Image (tube, rainbow, N blue to C red):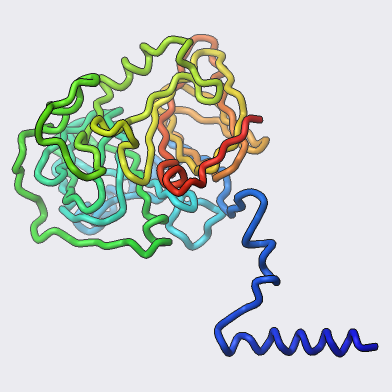
Length: 347
């Protein structure tokens, strides 16, 4: 008969803890220390054929000056209310029209760009102008002044990737607008590519002391041939032929918080499934294929974007008998590796 009384005393005790701003760990321990990572992020595919008309329509209705950045955010349906594509990564599709300038600003979140279509656009990063062509990969490391503009005659579109959700979780976000729309060009055009995109040869002086990559643009004209030159003996069973965009000085990731990759799936190639304790965002660049995520098949083609949550089974397949498929991707792997939290499991 003493048990109900004790239960009532426990309930009363627990209810009273809130006034001291404390709580009983034993009530939530199983939810906090899970056997494997748990996330509300859902595998999701954004189709280019649906997004492109909306993006162009936004260009008719909203100017770059009004928007600061004219971007359609890729919002994960499992993270309702959050500006996030995965729990740590943000992706968006940005549009700039002929003659426009997206004004100068800087922020602590790191950012990357992969150019999807159009000619004549550029980015300026800390006084260095970087003309952009489809397939180019461009960095704006944290706290660098950057702006975008177009001197061409057609719309230019690119994929933005930022560690914005991670910065928000860590309360590390700072933002500063530029005093002028455009910054002064204080360096030669594409200065960093002249010094650091040399196939393993580095200048012996004036190397950066920090962890940021001194190379700000990785040209498609060099990246694609390098990918296609990889022999079958270099293929990963999980990714096919794959290259990482690295910091040419350290050999580490191109950004401190995000690693970026270019991969090729040969005709008929099917990769082995695995799980990794990282989240990823993929952009289909060439060809078409399928990615099976936790048993769900995502069918993708050029311009489609898809997200894979952490610790989720995934495998890729190129069903074409004659055409290669090429994917660009970025992930939060550098963070997980730096903290010692990276795991993977073959399936």
